[in-house]
Image (cartoon, rainbow over all chains, first blue to last red; front, side, top):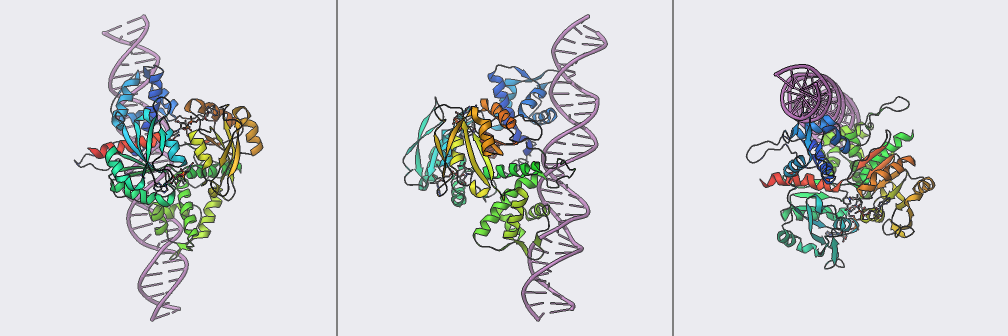
Length: 229
Length: 229
DNA sequence: ACACATTTGTGCAAAAAAGCACAAATCGTC
DNA sequence: GACGATTTGTGCTTTTTTGCACAAATGTGT
Ligand SMILES: NC(=O)c1ccc[n+]([C@@H]2O[C@H](COP(=O)([O-])OP(=O)(O)OC[C@H]3O[C@@H](n4cnc5c(N)ncnc54)[C@H](O)[C@@H]3O)[C@@H](O)[C@H]2O)c1
Ligand SMILES: NC(=O)c1ccc[n+]([C@@H]2O[C@H](COP(=O)([O-])OP(=O)(O)OC[C@H]3O[C@@H](n4cnc5c(N)ncnc54)[C@H](O)[C@@H]3O)[C@@H](O)[C@H]2O)c1
């Protein structure tokens, strides 16, 4: 689990935005992007809530934590609100991402074109498999593909330094994940997205978010089983 | 968001297991499997909590909702507790899964070998792409691979009926996701894992869990930005 | 200028989740 | 069989999150 957003800062300030709110901001951002693409200028909390699947009251409270960006009796300016969220979340500049483990999943992530438009750029691929190292992998979807060289695990620290990667993705088997994580942290990475089905131990100040697909299916199975009764 | 586990049943019973607890059970289950593999017989709440990254108090409270399966002064029997969790979650029998959208992600999921050992079996692949329909895709990892035919989207309902699929995975582009979801529901699927970055509207009684990789990265970016200050 | 329809922002209440602390139960030892 | 060392299970407290309801602010029409 990532560190609380309410942790204190060096200067003593306390973030007022709750973790629950932060986890919903990306959905609002995406919905606003979609509305902007369809040239809609204004949106009400009711409409935006419906698109994102939350209650309008929760949406308004979430947004109120960023500031008072709406107009009573009118709603929110799509572009303006979108900009405010992107600024708050740090999406107005691209985050360089390093992917460790270029197997089924790592490759799918690399190929995926949706990251570029959401503030991320895959800048490096690393694997330990000799047959993969040195090969090129297409990154990004149609239009803006870039061929990236797969680097050796032993070059991890150098690659991170050279590319200035800030976010690390762990897509190795579970056995290797903790070791990879340790090296990412040592190399200065403080934000890790982990796909391996294992809990990563990291020092304070490092955030780990886990994506566990088997768990998600198991949770669904739990509910499904109950329905059958 | 999935339906509350505290929803009432037909017979009036109320599930006492909270959603937060349910979301952690898969991690406990996996850790116990790991311990069982290494032939460990007993485990304390402290140890199991450390492996899964939660507090021991929370672990004990979570487990207490399933029943009183530990022994004071001793701990928990690994195999016994593992069995109890698997039974509670419905993992003692395989759940048939249909994957709709056999692109980057759908294929990675199909290839993945870890599902079989966790109570799931991919029984059908569906796509709308004419060049994919009819081709075969290897499912599962070394040892137990099965070639699955990619079926046409128009056969979705038939395929679900024939394979008795209970869980549906949506791995299509966002534009198609709601339509696919509607058809899955109409075909009787009541548990959906959605990878498309969009909120799916489903009728009551249908659970959707969303895996949104871009959102996860954005949440990490939010925290990363704060650290930089 | 004023009444009226909207829609935001927020104080307060309720519910859910997490954390604390310790009594109760068990084991090994003397 | 009593005693001390453990470790579970749980009542209680605190924190977090969600939900409700409405005053405050804005635009519109007359
Ligand atoms: N593919 C899926 O659908 C899926 C689903 C759920 C979970 N996962 C998890 O995601 C992870 C990756 O899955 P996958 O299917 O891509 O596996 P994979 O076996 O296809 O790929 C793993 C890659 O990691 C590389 N690797 C191994 N050790 C390494 C190390 N120490 N450093 C760098 N690279 C290393 C391997 O060479 C391989 O290329 C696994 O932990 C898996 O459990 C995958
Ligand atoms: N690949 C990733 O790493 C990644 C990351 C984040 C999110 N996603 C999301 O996951 C989804 C799938 O991603 P992908 O990379 O596999 O995309 P993809 O384009 O590689 O694959 C999508 C597949 O869905 C099929 N499809 C399209 N419409 C369909 C329909 N109506 N019915 C059945 N099949 C249909 C296409 O033919 C294609 O094979 C997308 O929504 C994407 O945004 C993917």
